[in-house]
Image (cartoon, rainbow, N blue to C red; front, top):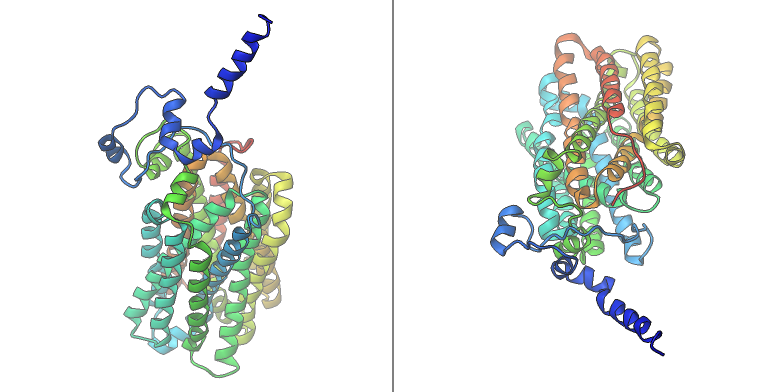
Length: 468
């Protein structure tokens, strides 16, 4: 009898001492105290350390299972809403290349001046990189689901009335802000899901699908139906209105409070999460290398997609319609590559797969540049798109594995938005150089960028098991 009582007492004490998971998640501040933190910041200290957070950030690692794209059921609708947003983004980015020759004529512009439509979104992308973390902490994914589509809708309404060119440049910056917010938010969210490579492959595949459709329809409206270049934006207005409605409906419950509870701190760092991601090692190394990699990658993607039509008309002597179809082939290659190689990449690992895809894309770029035949160039650029396609999704997945969970939105968000500014910088630089040297400079610029981003990629740390 006496030998049994101590055992019963131990069991009772153990059950009292162990708090439930529910209480840890619901009351993060109390959980931190129970787990033995001797120092708890006062409200004033906490506000000084992290101005963007209205709830305390525990240093308890989360052991929750990753989300799935189709469970719970609400995630299914959110996934579809994010897919539609990425389709709009693809249409937005790919339309530039289709309409550039006609903007030159309509506004009587040089290469340098028409390239400003690439440069102006840089302002929007940089603003989104700085504000993305704050929007998540204060308004959650609901804030992104409202602000991003609204920027698209307003921009397309103004573009459709074909205002003076300086106004056009400004509204492309507004569209860039919407792109940057959604790009960062949905990449960070899906990059932490189960089967992230496959899910992100489909997400970016939908982007590529939108980018494939846009130049096809826009070119057909201009060359076959004899419509003005802005006619395509009537369709874009309708698409953006649907995006605003579906995104708000799907993400309405994802408030700032929900986001803060789901992404508590998992390190002992205090202060703003964006500063931790950008200036505290080793996270800063990962964030900046991925940001620079994506900067170059997106620059390659949009410079090729944006200038390929002009290049094929001027350098390969193609017809307007056939040259427009080469842009469609490039974006179709990206779409198929993301869908197909998205299943190959996780089998061999993100680090190795991108280290293989990039040299293949570089060889195809040399073929495109050095063989001056229209059909060879068209096939080479489509295949190049195929091997470039999975790079962005794989880079996002790699970043989620290298950064702690509480830095996913700030780190990946910054990298994606900063990388998105490559869609502005490098196509603009190509246009400026083309003004002086001719559009044939597209090829050496793309080749140099391919080599540089490969160097950034191999400089990343070794990817081991995913860390929370």
